Image (tube, rainbow, N blue to C red; front, side):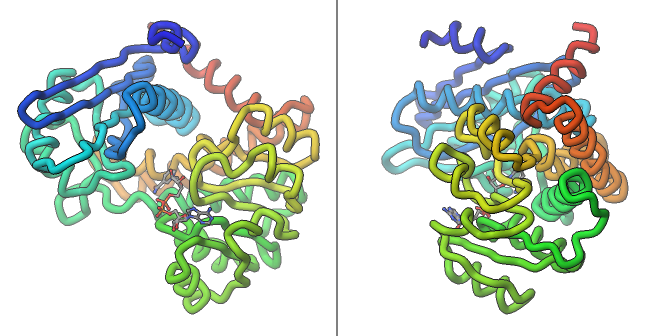
Length: 348
Ligand code: NAD
């Protein structure tokens, strides 16, 4: 597919390419939609097989940010950037300085932050050159680690899903299987344990599994079998694509609700979940806590406000789930429709 064809398919927007000969910077900034405000989204710094893969990643990720911000009531548009990791030796600080000049040239239409492969130190380099960056430690006047906020929002989304699918207000005694106990997963386990849930966990990193077992007590499943756990809620908190053609038929849960981005490998997998009677909490609705937190930093950080807005993820997931149930429509379709309505109500 040609680039303009891709942009038309995804409903874009702007696509910016930045190159710097001295540092070898090859960067992409995708600005999907700015009707709600300047675009905000992380900068990925990973290896890509080729530039087409990097562009496709940026486009897909930025579009999801538009949806996430719209449903969370965050006054930002969807943006994302990608720096293609150079194959050989490179000067990291110089590379990120060149990236910062690229971002600065966009004059605030894109605000960058941390994502896979980037660190707070990289953001500090960027901040030396442009103000259009967020996601700093609390000590540096920022909003700190977003993971506890993401986990809080996921717990609230699970509560809303449980209300609709199981008709109960409490997580007491419910069994939740958590795939991936990294930054968000471990915080989600803490949230769930406090709420009285029973945990089964899996991670490819055994040390992380041990940490949760020792701190909270949990059953352990193997990473390739966690999705088959007979449980109330399956919470994918690892990589994207956890719900796919292979896994969807093996699930033995009533609800899928977790933190991972892009949980549905393909939209058809959302249809399959729905056909099986499993309630799905759309990822970009339930995992917005981190975005809410960093957006508060851009506005002038107030932890209580960030917490309150994250708690309200309950209402969003509840509305999606109820409408899905009442209209017999897959929740991801309902959520997409709600995003279109929110964006359509904005003056262009
Ligand atoms: P992380 O890298 O800290 O944790 C992911 C964990 O998943 C790791 O511990 C990894 O070992 C494990 N893992 C990888 N493959 C696995 C497999 N096949 N089975 C079991 N475990 C596996 O990342 P994170 O920050 O905790 O984010 C988790 C997910 O949530 C990601 O998809 C991320 O994009 C999404 N997310 C994170 C945030 C945030 O605030 N960090 C916000 C929104 C969405």
